Structures are given as C-alpha cells and as structure tokens.
Figure 1 (cartoon, helix red, strand yellow):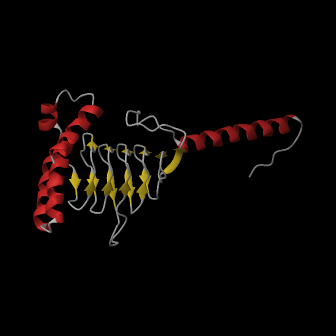
Figure 2 (spheres, one colour):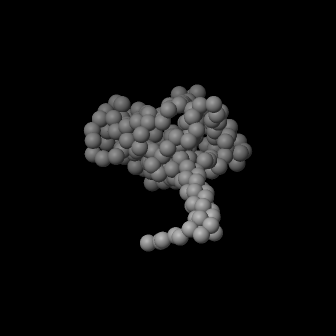
Figure 3 (cartoon, rainbow, N blue to C red):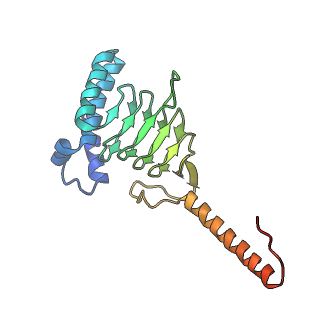
Length: 219
C-alpha cells in the first residue's frame, strides 16, 4: 500500500514541472486526492459495501471535480493533470503509467450492461477534452489528441485525433508522455489543404481552356 501511495506522488514529480516537492503534491494536487479516494472506494466496492463506496466517490467528486466510479480498476502511477471534469466509468480499466488531462471522459455509449467502458493499456496518454466512449481497448504507448472522440479500438503505438477519432500515426514513432500533446497531426486540415490544391489545379486548367478559345458553360 505504501509503495502504491509513493508511486502516486512520484509520478506527479516526474510528469509535472510545477511540482516542487512531495509535501506540495500531497496537499495541493486534486488528481492525487481523487486517486487516493478512489483506491479506498474501490476496496469498499470489492468488499460489496456499494453504498459506502459510491458515497465516498461522490464526496471526492465534490472536492476535486474528478468523478471516478468505485468499480473502475486503476493501475500504478496514473497521473491526472489538473483533472477538473474528468469522468471515469464503472467498468474502466486503466493500466500503469497512464496520463489523463482535464475534461477527459472514459465513458459508455448507452444503457448496455456488462463491460461498457474503455480499457487503457500501459503508457497511454489522453489529452485535454478527449472522449473515449464504449467498450474498446486503447493499445499501449498510444495517445489520444485533445478534443478527439474515440469510438473504436486503437492499436498499440498509435496517435489518434479528430471527430470521430482516426489513427494518424502508428508504429515507427516513439510515443512518450513528455511529448507536447497539442502539436498533433490534423487530418481535417490536411484534407482541406488537399481540396484547396485540387481547386487551384482545376481553376488553372479552366483558365487555360478559356485562353485557347474554349467556351465554359457554367450552371
């Protein structure tokens, strides 16, 4: 237990340059408070003290702004940065060394029973405002870009962006938690750029036809 608590503190010191010492982390980091409350609530949940577990999770939600269902399974060294608005559903499973930024939802897609929330493998990063919805697996070493909405499985070593989320990088690229998670590829912007280039080519061809005496009949 003490090793787990130490890991929860050390990961903040490793990941957040604003964290100066352990005392500051213990008293001032809501992400750590939410994780510690969850570990106790999860223990109560496994002992079938469902009401007490939910009650504790709601108290934690009130004080931290982070909602973690006591049924969720959380591994070692989870880092919740800032954390306001984070929601983690009942059947979520989170591996080791994961990072979650503010406004992230790990939720379901409806009223289905059983496993209905995502599973995050080790070393996954979920950037600000991303939504991962449904029972799917996010492969290890993957990262989900800010504001993305992920509705299907993500293979390992991938980068996902967009709505709906699409894999834009997979394998061959090292995925670290110290990468700047706002500088990600933008597939929508890339597609718009391709369309603009195509329109420019068509306009050039039209100008060439008209200059050669051709007749353009528009709508």
